[in-house]
Amino acid sequence: MDPPTNTLRGSRYYGLLQQRVGRRNQSDNMPFVVFFDCESDCTFQSAAGGNRAEAFTRMQATVVCAVVIDTEQCEKGTDRSTALSFAKEKHWWRDEAESGKGPFNELLKLFDEADCIVAFNGIDFDLPLLRKHYGSSKRGMKRYLDHRIKCHDPFVKIRTATDVWFKLDVLLRANGLPTKTGTGLEAIRMWENGEREKLKTYCAQDVRSLVALTLLERLEAPNVGSLPNHVHGITSALAGIKALRAVPVEEEFVIVREERICEGPRRSYAEVAEAAAVR
Image 1 (cartoon, rainbow, N blue to C red):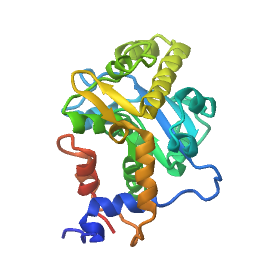
Image 2: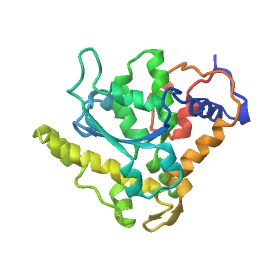
Image 3: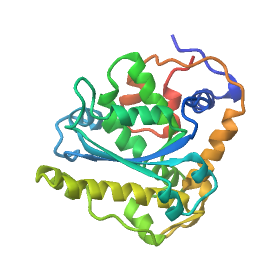
């Protein structure tokens, strides 16, 4: 039987999103935003599996880098140099973890407590790559969906607005920002060759560049034109989250079937949320 429909504002997706962004860890006096990027150990072509979802079960993250910035700095559209001066940079290796704990436990806890999670193509790559670290329980499924809903993905937003699949480096170059120091294929080779410091530096630079990109008031998209902040920017994303917090909500949602999220062709952010059951 189909799950009940949330009638809030006439949209199950709206109600699902609003309920999740409305809560913040009250023990942390300084709300924050997490920008992150994952590197993988192989390509989809070399990963075993008949489809993308199966490939993700075998592909592993090698290192994850993150920049944590106070929400206030992002809300007021601080320039990137100032914002990064307030930032905390972190990283995690897949083969380094405390006994009995997963290598990315601290990262997932940051996601739990963040006002917003930001990743370039995070909805279709970084979060699915980390999916195995959430576990297979209903609680893990729910946590994973919570983090997807919290994720502001400039790649998805720009693609939806322009119908163009822009690479991060193309956008960085077009807007006079520091460009990538390598490629995903080179990052795989760095891991295979044990060049860990070089790999961490590459990943961390990608995250810093992502911070700079999302803080731009306007984004120049080659052969398309100038895009306003509400397409790509963290300032507008946080304004939307703040507005949603002001709306009363009903009860918490629950996950009914993970397969609706993970199987089948790749889907948009809204379609993923719509495929999940609420309440």
